Structure formats: structure tokens, C-alpha cells
Length: 179
Image (cartoon, rainbow, N blue to C red; front, side):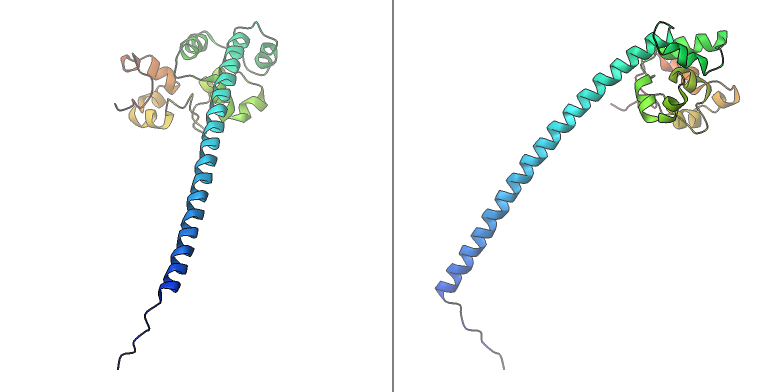
């Protein structure tokens, strides 16, 4: 035996439709608020990115001055590190002239180097392996060492090893970015 439900009357259906429409309007309003908040967050993120790039550039400029021995902080940095050898000086010049080296990024990423008061380029040149440290977001030391184990065998800094090869000509990242 089947039980028949009574058909809802028009008033009940109209009330239910009104409630659903009100809920839908509230959801649309919530969606608009979320979209506005998302736009605010994206704008704040973009502003923070611009500020970080600007500060990074200013810090990198300062580090170049200090690294050349002309800034206030250079004496402090130099006092904490062993003197640079001729070979290291040549490698530092190569490293600092590369777009794959980002001193400001290195210091932000590895705050222990800041605490040590060491020149970031010299620190990276001397300590790229344990733990593995990257010279910038555009150069993956781990991948480079997997692809070029001879760099470890020759005891050459991975970025310097790369910069001394023809493979580095025109490269803006390692591994190369796919088009």
C-alpha cells in the first residue's frame, strides 16, 4: 500500500521559493565580499612584492659597496672571514657579476649568514653544500650537482662551475626554464 503525500499548496511553494531566493541573494552578497577581499589581498601582495624587490635591490647595492670595501659594514664583514685567495677573488667577481646570484635573496633565505656577519658571496662560495644553499631562486644547486657530479669531484662551487661552462651563456636559470 502506497501512501500518498498531499500536494503542497501554492502558498507553501511561494514561501519556500521566497526563502530560497533570499538565501541565494545572501550567497551572492557573500561572494561579492569574498571577491572584494581577494582583490584587496592581491593588491597587498603585489605591493609587498614591489617593496621586497625594492629593498632587495637596495640591499644588493649596499652589499656590492660593502664587498668592494667602501661601506661602513665592510670592515665588520671582512673581520669575520678568512682573507680571500686569488682564486676566490676571481670566482667572487664571476659570481657577483651573474644574474643567477642574488645577495639580498641569499640573506633573506639564510638568516644565519646575517647573524654570522659574513659577506654572503664569500659565504656561498665557501659553503654551498652542507646544507645545500642556493644562490638565488633561479639556480637549483641540488639539480646542478645531480646533472654535473664533476663539480663536487673538482671541489668547485656549483654556480662558479656553471658560469665557467658554455652552457651558462645566455642562461637565466638552472635548470633552464621551458618555453
